[in-house]
Length: 391
Image (cartoon, rainbow, N blue to C red; front, side, top):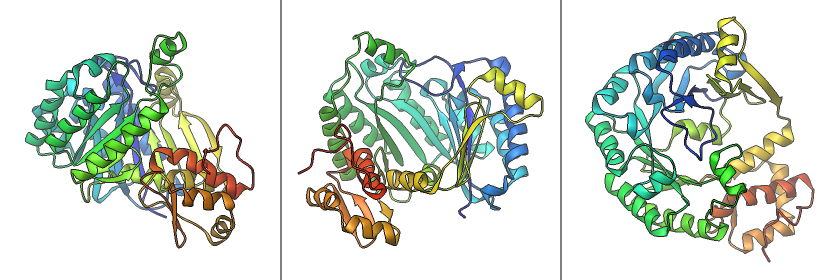
C-alpha cells in the first residue's frame, strides 16, 4: 500500500464567492485557535487508522476556504500534530492554499519556516472584469504580487489556480490570463472550467435566467487551446485540468487520481482507505461539538464494492496522461467490444498493450469516455443521453 496523504480543511473565508460550493464560513478570527485545536485533536485520534497502512504521511494539503487567513504558527501546530501522530515522510510534499488578498512576503516566509514547501495561490484570473464577476476581493496587480511575494519568501514550488468560462468574459480574457500566467513561470497551473454548483449564488442566478455560461463546444475549444499553449510553454498536461513543469506534478492530487489512501480532517473533510470513503460534518458548530466531546466528527461513510472501485479507477485514470492499466479480464472484454473499437478508431482513446488512455482529441471528453468504458465493462448499454455521438 502506498504511503497515505493528509488533507486539512480550513473553512474560513474573507468573503463567500458566488461560484464556490466548498464548505466555508465568513472569517471569524476569534475561532481560529479553537478550530486548529479541534483539527489537531481529530488528527491525533484518527491518524493511525490501520486501513491507511503504516507509513508516514507522504503529502499534506491544507486547503479551504482560505488557509492563509490563519496565522502561520497555528498552521504549524497542525504539521506538528501530523509529525507527532504518524510522521511526515522525508521529502514530503506539504502544500498550503493562499489567496492574493491575504498574501504578503512576511506571511509567506512564516509559512515556509513552518514547514510548507509548496504554495497554491487562488488567482482565478488575470483580468479584473473576470475577478469582479467571480466575486474576488483582489485585483490583477495583487495576484501577480502574490507570486512575487512567494518567490521572495523562498517558495520554489508554486501553483496558480485559474478558472475559464467566467460569465461576462470572452476567449480573449482567458487567453490573456494564460499568457500572463506563463510569463510569471509558476511550476504548476490548474486551469479549471467554471462549473455552476448546486446551492451557490451562481446556481440561483442561472435558474432565474440571469447567468449565461459558456457552451460545451466553447469550453471544449478553450480546453484544446489551453492545452496546446501550455504545452508549447513547457508544461506537461498530466491531468484534464492540471499542468506542470517537469517533475512538478501535484503529488497529493496524483494520489487522489491513482487511489492512494488519505485522511481528511476538519469541517467536511473526506477520507479514503482503499475500500471505504467517509466524510465529516459540514457544519462548523457540529464539528466543534463532536470533537470537543471526544466523539468522531464523521457524518457518513460508504463502502465501495469492487465494481465501484473499478469504475472510479477507470474514470480517474482516464483523466490523467498515464491512463489506466487494465486487468486481464477487463482487457479481454474491451478487445472484443465494437464500441471501444469505434472510440479508438475515432481518435478519442488509445490502447497500448494493457494501458488505455485518452488522446489529445479525447481529453475534453474524458469524463464521458470514462462512462463509456465502464458501461462496456459492466455489460450495460449506455443511455442515449450519456453516450458519445461517435460513428
